Every structure is written in structure tokens, then in C-alpha cells.
Length: 142
Image (cartoon, rainbow, N blue to C red; front, top):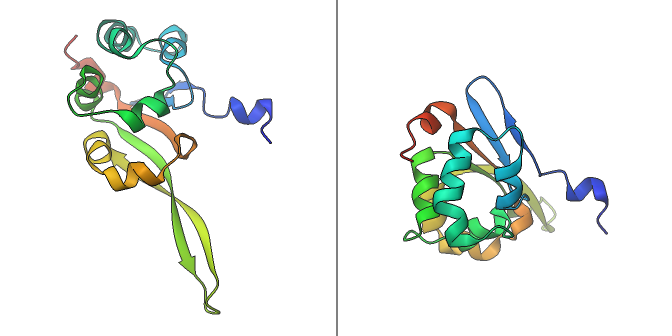
């Protein structure tokens, strides 16, 4: 059962002094229209990502299906950001009981796209945010 609060937990565009954080449950249209989205990122989305992907695809769904040949992959690689992912890990306690724990891990987009076995066991809900530097955004070739 999901509530309205849970649906909107990972729909954000935040900035601090040196980084930008994008919640992965947003659609590309929501990211492009958010007030906190920098203009340079909006331009890159409208030029490269939206014509290829479409406006209604969520960012987490796209990252799971991303290939290294796409133009969106080129944009993500130039930003040199990290994906925050909750990875399910099977843990055995002293009594021999097994349970699944979720551990937070950071992946570069190149590493994440290349790991097919990781992408197979992940659901879109396990991908939480994409974090990248404002310095890399300033050097983005648009």
C-alpha cells in the first residue's frame, strides 16, 4: 500500500553549495519544469534526452533500460554523477536464518549501465537519486 507521501518522497531537484540532486521518481518533463533545475541542465534535457526518450518516462525507469549508445547516456556521463541505489543483500545470521537487507551504494553511471546482473535484480523503486557536481554541469557540452 502506498500513500501520497510515499509517491512524492523521491520527486525533487535540490541544490547545495557544490552539488545538484535529482530524485529518480520524477519524469523528465517534471525535471525540466522544476524551478530548481539549472538552465543548462534544462537545455541538455530538451536538446538530447526528451527527443530520444519522451516526456512521460520516469528517470529511474530510463536508467534501468539505458544503453551505452544513447544520447542520454552521453549527457549522464558528462555530468560524472553518482546514482544512489538501495541494493538487496541476502544476510545469514548465527542461527542460519536468512533475510534480505537493503544497503545503500553509489554507482557511477558507466559502471551501473555495464552491470547487467545488477540491473536485473533491481526494481525502479530501489534507485533513489542522481547526484552530480555543479562544476561538471558548467562544463557540459550543450
